[in-house]
Length: 166
Length: 210
Image (tube, rainbow over all chains, first blue to last red; front, side, top):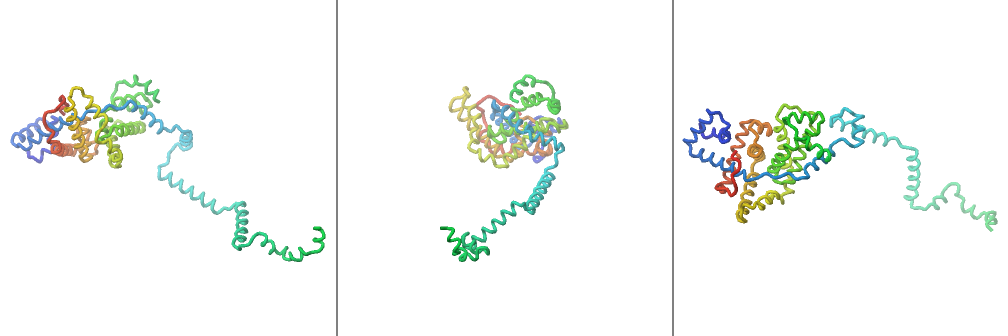
């Protein structure tokens, strides 16, 4: 046996897990090679030293915490149970995600291109108020410019109406 | 469920191999799961504690491992040894934790695992000076193991503390038996250099010789 072969036999030799033939071959090499013999002696000492790192005791809360984790992971919510009933065969993640995204996009498109009557009404109102605001005039001025009130001067100075006010 | 745990505690002291217990868990027998928990809680916590070197994190990770086992009960097949499967999951969980860098956030508690310190300080057989020396030795051992490459570290811990055979370690680490022997050789070679100054008479009684 050569020194570089010891990599595969050294630990098993110390563990006494080699066949009697392999054990004898290693033994023979160690008798001739001081470096390998020294290395294995050190390995044995290191292994003993590692025993000084003693075990710890798990805390008393271990079971309680595990208990909680198991409960949290179980499908105990009503919606999970309901979901598992209506969908007993769970779809693979990517398939489910693709379907969900497609459904969402279709829903957005339908809502986007189907204006309701309320939208039309509020849209018109907004348009009128925009005109008023962008023109920089108040409502009174706007009414004065309407066709029905274009003769406002005449109407306001109409004698009959003046009489009625009195 | 905690009540269930207490109620089933005595029932959990049931006989049977790990695989038999796991098959019973698969059939819905929760007391068998408690049985597995009682068998492997301490070794698993200690394996994870030595991997991440933080007692609190180790407990959380051990709970995650048991949770994974519980959730996988329906698909369990006794093709491999239960311990191999358990430590395979545990190694995966621990390495993920270390790679995520979450250990950095807990670095304050790394140097002084509370349980280890309390244990050493409470050892009435040692004088104050001897206690300090023992504390330093253990810290150096922990540091030397922490500095090992991840796979070498897992191999050493599974071999030395969990006493898994080469085949089990190979299955847990997803490599060959020959690779395991090589990992162990290189790990011990590194530890031999790093801990050379500590080699000598021990303060406390003899430990395991494996």
